[in-house]
Image (cartoon, rainbow, N blue to C red; front, side, top):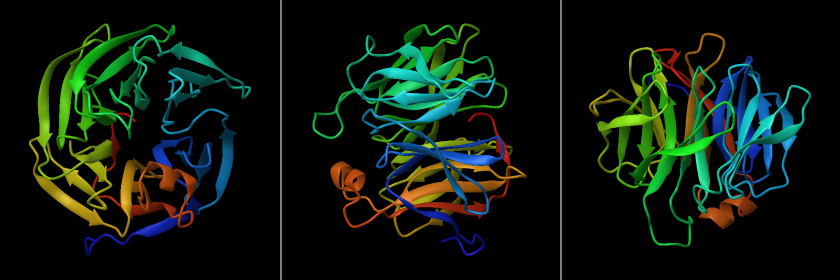
Length: 288
């Protein structure tokens, strides 16, 4: 652990925490093992928002500009929307674009959702490159990027012009320009991260990115170009992170012991998932 950063345990007894988002004064996250979406406040009080009946590995989330929740039913090839009255309805069909699991999601200020696809069945199949799809507010979906080495966490810069994608299998953050129509272009390396496997990511006002990493059991803050600015180490795999809190400068991250997909989802060895927090050097920026 970085000496200047004291890790606070906000909540425990999580089966498999992923996809944290700070929204409406609370941290929202998915518990893939319990098939639940929950919130937790800064005092550690958890509240169940939604329990689903579909396979929840993966199940990621984000919010439309009007506050409605979007949920990726990754193995069903569906993007769902939770209406203000609590109903869960279909927002878009992604199955026609790929039969492989859909993973992370980030929504821009116009309500366009970017959702990425692993490109192969994980675990179980030989690696194939993944893709990113754009879902427009009317529910239309199209592929806007391909050839990504296990796309994972994604973030949009504060000006709304750049999408950054973590490629877990090659240890880098990759950037794309976002066009007026939402299409992606000018693919380039934002940061090379040798020896790393970046998972969930978020951005801060200094222009840096945080990424969570499972094998390294850490969260890392990097500048564009790849300079490591700070590392926060933990005793178990770190899967995703987000900046939030009242002043938007608390780094929340989700961690749990990793024993493979089935063991982790089933909670073999107990529910080791935690919601953790540290004070960050700069507040959040961009989306999510």
